[in-house]
Length: 475
Image 1 (spheres, rainbow, N blue to C red):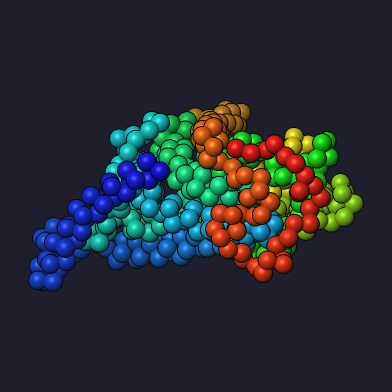
Image 2 (cartoon, rainbow, N blue to C red):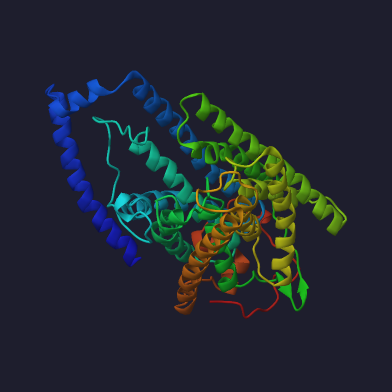
């Protein structure tokens, strides 16, 4: 909370300066005055540069909207795979992931993630707060507007944060979740993102992660695992040595969520091409969409077959998570693998997610939506698969050393996310601010945390075996 108050103070002071600058600029524009430098810059822009900038900016904006729409997908998936009595709480967390994430990424995260060329090859840097507009002098160095870039990047940050929501559903205090979400968006994700996408140390090593199998998904998945471990399982999830299934209340919502996420991924992966003008870029963008589609499809099929073989019945939730697993696995390497490679990556991811769900169950770790198997485990697989099957081996590296760089970098990023989040969750638990009471958990977080139901009360009753059993799990 102290962090949020401090950041708000900084944002107010900086906003006043920005407002003053905008007022001066607006007055000059209203008077019809144009600075000589701006006029010169405008006349020097060629038609090709102007077209490139326009196309890149507008397509990046559309891709940013697609990625932002993934928040709706996560919300529907998490709601569907959890109890009806926690629906409002889950929806609220997804809204706040985006809203708080935008504000903190603007003030802190964006500057940490992209500190500038002075910090190339390093582990930390800060470029300042807010977005520098390029209205008078378009940013031809990148070829797209700074505003579009921020919108695209903040959508990724929100995605990393919201992955955790489903893993901690049904038992975490709303205030504690807000602290976690702000901490990950303002610090944890931007710092690890800087190591790769901000030109930091891992980028200097040759680490590659095209759209974020590791930087986004493994970070969120590792944080989800830390949260699930520190929180402990939901009441009634495990009785003695027996695992008690607690199926979601609305599989239709879960399926809708996965379809929305799949569509949003066409902003996530093809959008990460960043430059779309010209035949080469257009072909590369659509090829990325092709490999993404292949991996998602085979992931769903392989997860279905693996679950069918193991459980003797085809399980739609496993197939849904299999599609997401394939999408996560291909995200790091969608630009540089063959079509056969994409099928292999997605297929392995589909099997991994089923095995990951079973492993967590055996370890008595309660992850209601499979956030770690989907995003953590398959994100790690995506990072390793890039070294194994990627065709864009960095100059100076052999195949073996490329695999080594991918493995070490992936391990560093996951350790950073898991370690920092485990520490934060542990501190919150120590001070008694992490988990709701058993009585509040049984009643449901909708009514105990927010004083409302998403459905008529008759529709939110627990039918799970053991949910009313005595428990010592609290924080």
